[in-house]
Amino acid sequence: MQLASMYQEIILDHYRNPHGRGLREPFEAEVHHVNPTCGDEVTLRVHLDGDTLADVSYEGMGCSISQASVSAMYELVIGKSVPEALETGEHFMTLMQSKGDAAVAEKLEDELEDAIAFAGVSKYPARIKCALMSWMALKDASARALAATPPTGGDKA
Amino acid sequence: MTQTVSRPEVGAQKAPLPLDVEAIRADFPILSRTVRDGKRLVYLDSGATSQKPLRVLDAERDFYLTCNAAPHRGAHQLAEEATARYEAARATIGAFIGAPAEEVVFTRNSTEAINLVAYALSNAATAKEEQFRRYAVGQGDEIVVTEMEHHANLVPWQQLCERTGATLRWLGLTDDGRLDLSDLGTVVNERTKLVAVTQQSNILGTINPLEDIVARAREVGALVLVDGAQSVPHQPVDVTTLGADFLVFSGHKMLGPTGIGVLWGRYEVLDALPPFLTGGSMIEVVRMEGSTFMPPPQRFEAGVPMTAQAIGLAAAVEYLQQLGMDRVQAHEEALTAYALEKLAEIPGVTVIGPPDTVARGGAVSFTVEGVHPHDVGQVLDDLGVEVRVGHHCAWPVVRRYGVPATTRATFYVHTGYDDIDALADAVREAQRFFGVAPAVTPGEAD
Image (spheres, rainbow over the protein chains, first blue to last red):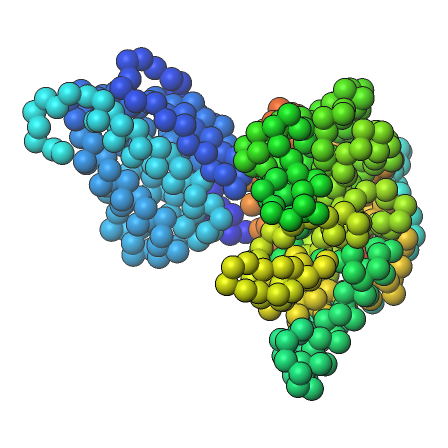
C-alpha cells in the first residue's frame, strides 16, 4: 500500500489533534478560502505585532490533508516575520511540486519541520491543493493585515 | 466467527444481471489496464464521464481516415460524404430520444446546451427581429430551478436573471432526497417563464416526477428544460412523452466522445429563439449592414461542427440501442439495489439520497463517519476503486444535507457485482486505515 507515504503518522496526529485551532482575537485580517473542486474550507485570522505573526487562528473543515496542513503551518509560522513566513510558504510550495523527489524533501527538512511529512502528498496531484489551501490563506491574510496596519518600523514593504 | 446466522453476502441479493458484463467489458480496452501497482481497475465514476467502447473510437477514426472534411461547406466529394455522415449521426441520435433530426442541435456538452437556451432567452429581449422576441425574459419574469441541480443547470439561470432583472426561484428538497413539490403551485406561477429541472440527480440518484412539474408549467405557460445528462445515458427517454420543451445531454457520459452534446428543442420553440453563438454555418445572408440566420438546428451551430464527435456519439447510441435501454436501466437498478444493501451493512456509512431503488438511478452518494470523503476516495483509489469525491458540482445539495462532501459511486453497462464488492471492501479498509472501524457486532462476519 502506497498510502502510508502520504498519510504519515505526523499528518494524522495533526488531523486528530490540531494545533492552534479556533478563531481568536485580536486580529487585523480574516480570510475565507475554499478549495472549489472539493469543498474544503478554512477561515483564517492573522494578528501582527509589527510585521511578526503574533497569532494565526483558524477554523476549517475538510479532508485530513487540508486540516493537518493548517495545523502544521500554525506551528511553523508563529513568531516569524511575514516575509519569513511567506518564504517558508514558498518552500512548502516547492515541496508540493517535487513529485515525490526525496532530494527536494531532504533539503527542506530542517526548515519545514512537521510540514515535511507532506512530501508524500506531492505524488498525488489531486491532493496538492488540499495541502496548499492554508498557505494561500496565510499569504492572503498577511497581505491584508499588513495593509490594514500602519507601518511601524518600515523595514519591510 | 461461529455465528449460526446467515453470512452478510446472503443478505445482499444478487439478482441475475440483465447485461452480460464479461462480454461488454471486452469492448472497453481501458478496463483491462491496472492502476496503483497492479490493481484491477474498478471504474465507478461513469457519472463524471463514461469509458468508450472500441466501436466509438473506430467510428471516429474511420471518419478521419476516409472522409474527413468540413460538413455543410464545399461541393467536393469528401465534403458531401462528411455532411452525409454528420447528418446521419443527427438522425440516429434524434431517433434515440424520439425526435426528428431538425430538433437536434449539437453543442459541446449539456453545459453549453443550457447556456445556449439561457443566452437565447436574454438575447430575445434585444433581438431586432420580431419573431425572436416571443420568449424574451425580463424584469418581473421568474425562472424556476430546483435545489438538486448540477451547477450547469443552476449558474446559467442565475446569470440570466442577473442580466435581465428576472427572479430566480427554486423548489427545495425533502430529507430523503426527493424534490419537495408541496409549494409547486406557488413557486411555478403566472410569472414563470421557464422551469429547469434535472431528470435524474447526479449526486442523489433521484429520478424526478417530471409529469407533475410539466403539468404545472403548462398551466402557466412556462417552458420546461430537462437536464438529461444523467438520465439519457441510463434510462429510456422519449421526448414525445416527456412533455418538455428542451432536453439536454452530454455525449461523453453515454459512451460517446467528449466535446459533443445535444440540445433537443421542440421545433416551434427553437424556431422562435435568436442565436447564441454566431458566425459561419448559421447564417442565411450576410451583408456589412447585418445578417439573417438559418432555421434550426443550423441557427445554433456556428462554426465548423464537432463532426467526428457527432459520428462517435451516434456509434455510442447504436451500441446502447443494441444493449437496449430498458435492459441498461434494469441492470443498473439491480446493481443499485445491491450497492445500497452492501453499504447499509457497513456501520458508520450513510447513503445521501433515496434509500431504495424506487424512482432512483444508479448514483450512490455516501458518507463514512469519521473519514472525510477525500480520504475515503484516496484509500479506494489505492485499491483500484475509482469513485468521485467532493460536492459533485452540486454544492447546494451537500449543504442541504449538512455534509461537506460525499463519496459517490456510479455504475454503467460494464459494472458488475464484483465492482460493488470491491467498493464495499475498500470502504471497510478506509475505516480500518483511519481507525474508525466500528467494533464487529454479532452477525457481522467480517
